[in-house]
Image 1 (tube, chains in turn blue, red):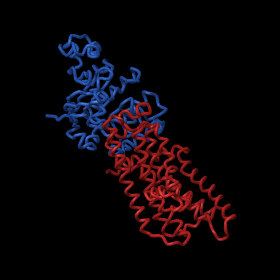
Image 2 (tube, rainbow over the protein chains, first blue to last red):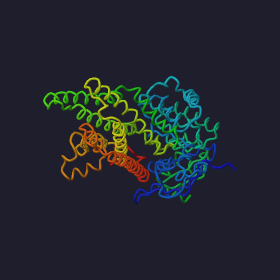
Image 3 (tube, rainbow over the protein chains, first blue to last red):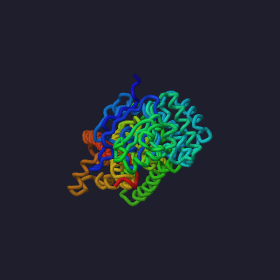
Image 4 (cartoon, helix red, strand yellow):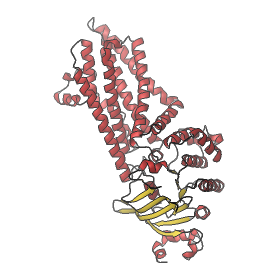
Length: 248
Length: 267
């Protein structure tokens, strides 16, 4: 049996009396892309922040390749990386400088060679000496993804990686992530509001609502199982009538 | 602790400085201005004071040592603030980097920048204003060490405050040396201060350094044990500041402050 890259067990997070994440359990396997979907405020980013170790769960456990983030943080995060629109790389360093700094931080072997591979892979060669702060949204996303793949992570967390990109660039990004996943057998947790993207890249989806996993399954068959035509319709139903869906 | 992660923090600061004259200039400029200003003041005072009394080692030496302390403290906090200004915390703290490694990187950065500042001051003070460091003898080394340790402690403490209270609290960092300067007895003996201020002064390692400096210049006896205890005090403050930073970081992770760290979200 192939062990899971990520195991989340009964994860719960309270902010005062407000329940942001309420007993969530799921796994991400090697080479699997799992979509974490849900309306704004459903608890997606809170879940990702807990997996990244920047937010402490109220209860529950998170294991990355068997390493508990609470007790073995460095080992767990050595095998993890992420890209999120709200965490751009420092704009006052160039593309190559940022990749060198984060490559060192993640202890990447043969760093110069790895950086050249990623510059080539993400078509960043001509931008290598540009400061990240002056890049377009699409270029910044590509740099952020290059950083996310620097350490050949076993677990990759992508929080709306294509949110600010035009369809052509978004399509390129999806292709590159898919290739990376199939080559390196990485487990990916991917949040997005783009249901076309979900159907295109995700092997499995988890629908979060009010901090709970409401539905999960294959993105291609899940809408039909709940009497909906498309994922978009299912998403709207999750957002507006979560209780009705729970009963189906 | 792993060396490569500490090196990553130092490398980031090096890249920032290499590409930005406006970051490099203050390392030299403020200390140079202080030395020039106080150099001329001491020259003037020498012309109106009793013959034989030299203000240069007393005042200019004190300014040099105090500026060194200030540069050490600001060396830590500026390196920290670079990460605040560039919203880099999520990238840093979602990596395997530990707090000890992060703070270690800030301290090494501060060592480099404060030594450059010290070199500038030493060259200016000795070549232009004739300050001879032989006056202090070997005691100069422990003087610098105590000030360095206390500067690091205060830098870590001030950074922790900014982490706790948000980017808008950066103003706290800059005047910290000014707040403690009246108690540090830089230009006057501790005995000049009222009793309650003397009690505060005894808790500040720099006050022992400046008392020692004046004692050496005036040829009075000075107990090395006092300086040793100030070094121990400064080392204790580093431990306390590191503990404080770790606690604040822990609090930021527990409350969600770190995940939402920005000028708008932190109160």
